[in-house]
Image 1 (cartoon, rainbow, N blue to C red):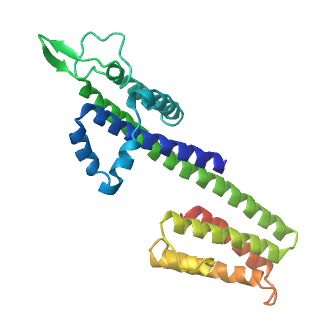
Image 2 (image 1 turned 60 degrees about the vertical axis):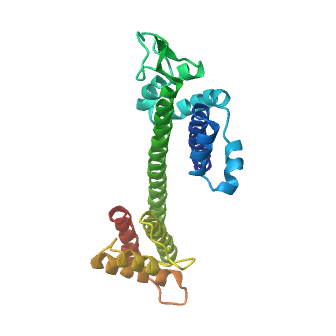
Image 3 (image 1 turned 45 degrees about the vertical axis):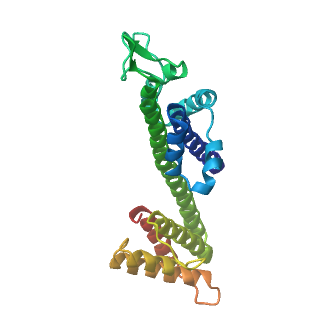
Length: 269
């Protein structure tokens, strides 16, 4: 599932990047060659200007495929925006007049200009704001997807941790104290590592311990002193379970570790 999520995420990023290129493509079609080069100089460094210009697609060829793929993504992730996205492209069957507000990207593809008494009332540049809105809608979908992806990962991880806590409880019932404590300790360590990651907190250690993670969270005010002391106590029990040469853990200690880990999972995030 994770691989599918990452592939979907990468595909969405490519669509957004292509949308930005289509904006440049339309801008190129609407500008003089000199004006467009000045626009590009503001975006890319001079020695990469020609290469960047060559990457800009032909709008008439690339847009339709981009529209179809983007529409499919929007239908899946933000169906409430489908109507707005398509309305920016499609000409309404009930359109009675053509002005800047009713001009569509479909009109642009058809090269439509509206004249009254030899004066241009609506030109093809009326399509540019519509395309810009479409790209903004797609970028909003990306934000929604990132949020959804985060929520899915959190739910999957929570289910996994709950299953491992149940395993630890079962091991405890059967008298495998060290094994039960070790499983619970791993869950606690992974959860604290995820909390640090969610708060964008990093450690210089490659494999930080519960104690290391606990210190980071306290130093950055994610947890308070009582929580820090409680986690320190759980870390001590975990160490007893993990080191065979130390004293044997008691049933009460392991039960406290399992119960405490379960409590931390539900109260610290």
